[in-house]
Length: 209
Image 1 (cartoon, rainbow, N blue to C red):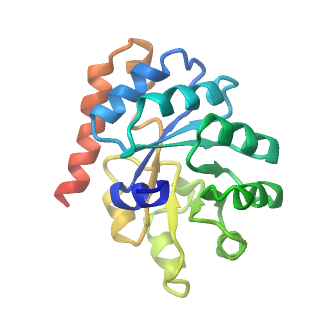
Image 2: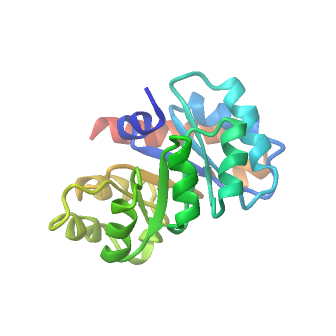
Image 3: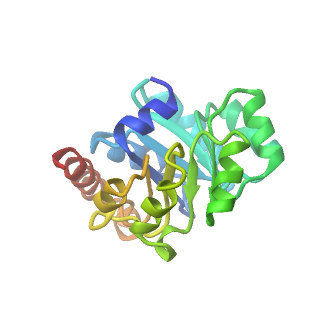
């Protein structure tokens, strides 16, 4: 499966936004062992490109590794060289979209309003990250899709184990999940078992619905 198929099938993209990525291997192993199949490393950390390259070496074809917070064409080239399988951005930018299209890399830009969402979709987005979703609520996804049912939307920001099923029930294509899945305290304590168990809780909760 390609990255978009993996995300469509498994519904969750784990967003890794950390100050220290020296533990990227251990963290990723815990998430993957817990059943997570799509992991995004944000470029807010200068070591994210190296982390993407490292994890791409250890992950099998059932796992998609991507880059987040991408805002320039140069960053697209860098993460593509590292092996990134998808690109996520907080906004839609022509140069990022063009670079992703040139190398056939799925592009998932962020948007907030219906106009922004449709603008991103019509200009080649593979799916649109609805961000920040915590300011919009679960019904917002259903409301946007009512007149625009062809869109693929990925709410991100404020998505957690308590509300993720409601987002999906309201039509979300997939979900971007960050700190509620990757607990900072567990990372600081190097408590990989706790992270694996939390990842499994998310995955099992979706599979039971």
